[in-house]
Length: 170
Image 1 (cartoon, one colour):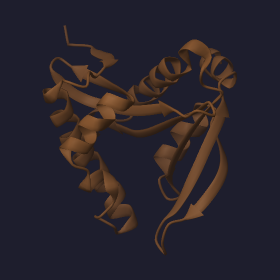
Image 2 (tube, one colour):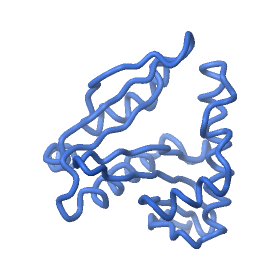
Image 3 (cartoon, rainbow, N blue to C red):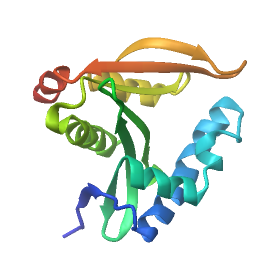
């Protein structure tokens, strides 16, 4: 019998999780950097201290296969009720098996608990078709674009908190 993937919240003092997330982030964002011809993107240059600060100030979920962190996602809720979701990463060997969708659902549930969140918002690059497809499948729609440089246009997608129930039950 194989091991199953478990999803849990990473604690701010979990040094091992922080280190594993950072290494996984570096691995996962290589394809994005190649796609846009830019290896100076923030996920590839983020420091361990900066990641630890995110663990302390926001919600960071990890998916583990045994002791190994194989996926992660982060989120915060702004004062205006916008739940911002970011850095959804899945180890390349674990992609295309629904883990990204499970993490997205889990972070939405966690950020939406207590009623503080009114809408969910995330972003990706305009050429990141797998990301765009996943987000559309989960009910997100484009609400804006921002040209970052000649190679990258950032697409912002959003959905209302109420839309979550309809998408997950469909």
